Amino acid sequence: MYEIFINYRTGDGDHLAATLDEALRHRFGDDAVFRDGRSIPAGAEYPHELLTRLRRSEVVLAVIGPRWATADELRQEDDWVRLELVEARECRIPVVPVLSDPSVRWLRREQLPPELGWLAELQALRYTPYRSAQDLAVIGDELLDLVPVLDQGGGRPAHEAAPHTSNATTGGRHGTVVQGRDFSGDVAGAIYKGNTGAFNTGPGDQYVNAPRLTGDGATYVAGDNHGGVRHVFERGRDSGRDGTAR
Image (cartoon, rainbow, N blue to C red):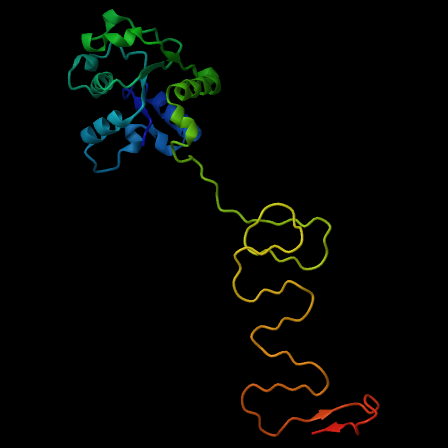
């Protein structure tokens, strides 16, 4: 869902629209910001996309350039900048004017078509290129106050963390260390977590599904044996035997 909808006029504020798009996506996530040039896929019906996304948004940023109020297009009923703002007003979606340059004056009602006269009564934010970082931070903070969900992971992060390797640190321990899947915290004794199959945790031998035989002469044969088995023991190991076993 796009919480922030950017309204702008091509050729009079589109550079700031792109700057806002990038900065706000970096802060709130890719899916939090709608800007038509980036967000509408190729081949889509843009009138439907624009109005649908607008009606689902939580706030509209209206980028006001130096020629915005005097543009002839603003007096035309089919002008998309005008249509988007009128639709936002009818849907009771908050509109925040953003003045794109220090030279841009605050809007006056007499400058505007009757349908947009209400814009002159809205508190506006100003963007100044030479203090870009500060102004973008202020704009983001104001949006956060208007749309608290932006602070709750409303959008996908712009730069997702890349997969990484989990490393286990064992301090001053010596010998072999086996990490069984992921775990966090200090290594204290043996830790088993979701392992399958044979898993040896001690210093001794490992016997898995096999008989355990000990002692001299112990023999285990799995499968065919041809020729017998012969053991030879050193004399003196057992004084009661002649050293040969068959």
